Picture 1: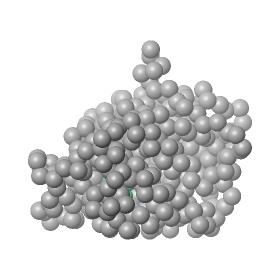
Picture 2: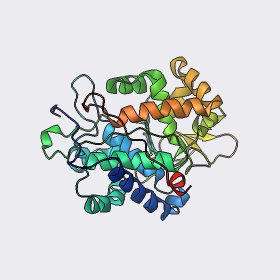
Picture 3: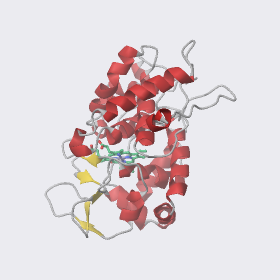
Picture 4: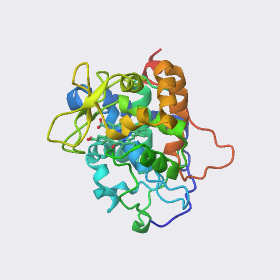
Length: 294
Ligand code: ZEM
């Protein structure tokens, strides 16, 4: 993909209240659909959409990232790693009609922020100003998003490509507390734990437990020794196998507040990769639905 300069431009006259309104509408629609995907709701789907629109970023040439909202275009739309994400894009599209001034990149990343905060996670500082890009030369090629069958070195190098260190890499993957794998999307199957609609540090706690390779015809994945009902991907297991990752797994398993703090910072950075903001621009911290009802 070709690099473009990605300067945040907030639509004329729009400010915090406008984006809090979009936040509230997304939150209300999530609340109306809590039964989706066997009780997972839309939390996992929306967080994954925000991650995949951002995680195509390459620091060395400033290509990819959430700015242009390019996932609707080929070849990014056909990237096998994006299978199933039309569901999240379709979920959000009514808000693009209701608020025509919002860009796809802003809407998709804001959806992730709503999902993390409304499922009990930390506050995610977020800044608007992404712009829809129609130029196909800027659409990232497949191969930028991680392949779950790989090892720790691959994960380390891939997140380094985006500019993340080992601590941030481990913190970001803790989002696997939410949602599920679906054989029809990725070939993997099942949730990582029982509380897949709540944002917690449970992913790390479980990862440190006992796991064995699942016996089935599908892709290699792990199954928990205790109940045989939860899963880990090979790349998840790699966080436990590598000395440069496991120390953070242990810290986050012990200390949810530390995980929340580190996740918030790394995820906020992820959603903004490649974007230039005006000097001193202040991120929005949205109120949760509960906080507004108090
Ligand atoms: Zn995921 N992820 N991910 N991830 N992910 C899946 C689902 C979800 C990897 C991966 O291959 C997969 C991060 C990192 C990595 C979420 C968030 C984040 C699935 C299952 C796969 C295969 C998709 C399906 O079948 O529907 C790999 C290899 C990763 C790094 C090495 C990061 C970072 C995330 C967010 C910050 C979420 C929330 C889901 C659940 C989606 C859903 O539909 O419920």
